[in-house]
Image (cartoon, rainbow, N blue to C red; front, side, top):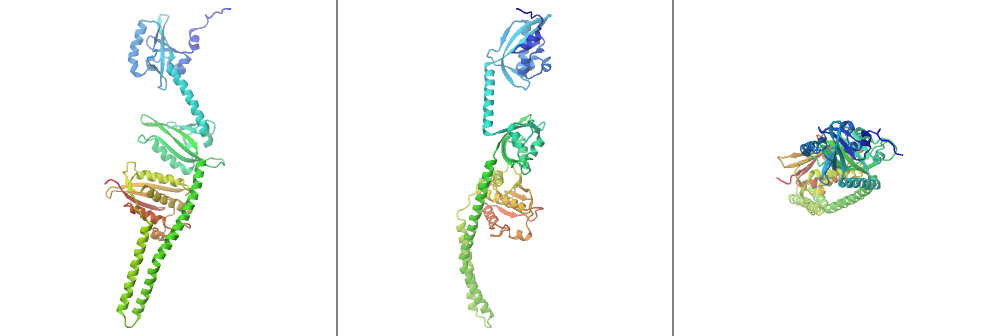
Length: 499
């Protein structure tokens, strides 16, 4: 049985149509917008109604479209626009959507209107299908790799996150927390490192990308997790507005690395001890005979001096023998040290900032104990002359000494500050490594660079001696600052590669 549809009004049909449609008057103002148009364009009905239709087009097309619109109302007829001509419509977010447009004239109570219908092009349909497929592949990849994603809104200081981040950080189930809450979840020992990376990433001068490893502090009895984060910062009008990051759990790798490092350190310590023993034995062997001869000659000289009638010839021979044996011992030691240090250190132009950052990263994962690092580097520092590997070892050794000194003194969190200075007059770069330990007593300061002198129960006392030799071989110096206000402060200088 046929029914009457006379009671159904135009707005009912208008909103029931699946295509996005706008009703525009002859002044170019939107009068009606159906639900599909609101969804496509990202506007509410209240936002669209009264809007000039040209505002939905790229700025470069607006003037031309105004002329076309006036021409349409002067000669109203049903027509199509686009048909593969790459027309676009702007969404509320400023995104350009490729569309074809249909225009149909309507007259109501002597007022002329244009019914504008937007048809998505095959290109847009394909793009949306590809996007959905890409999002599904990304979801499966995240699930397989155990990746978590967080999104920091730098304007509202809020952090949105997915289920993996929620599990990593023990966050509540509302998918969003304040930035302060996010930072509080990072272990206290790593917050300064996070803040350093954060501050550098939000500067326009930086590369905007970042990556770091940090630990998570949680309120439960779960063991601490190590996470690796990488991502990018997005800017708007030179202001950082968003920080996007991808995180994965690297706890197993870090723990394995720490275990292997501890074993390596034990083996290196044992090897260094054996080297020290062999070195001491070789030195003792080389100077034992000269020392015995010097002792014998000295006894003869003393006996000659005690006689009532001094035999000058005998005394002269004894003292001459002492001198000769002393020179022999010195020569033997010199030859022995040349043997141990055979092969000159090759000094090449290197990036001192990069070496310092690498040394800090190595120290953080080498099992020497937890510490907070604060780096004050000079981004535009010219290259210095040094051996990269040897310099890295020197800096790691100084960092390790500071960490161990703080921990032995009962300081819960060791803090190391590494600073760079430029001395243009001497054409040198200076590195200052300052710790928050107890510092050195005056007695220790006097002997700190002596071979085989150590304050450690398991040390062999050669680290600083070798470090000073390596720096001096590159044309620099290494010394201890006795005037440091707190902790221990070591300084080293290196020449710039370019005069």
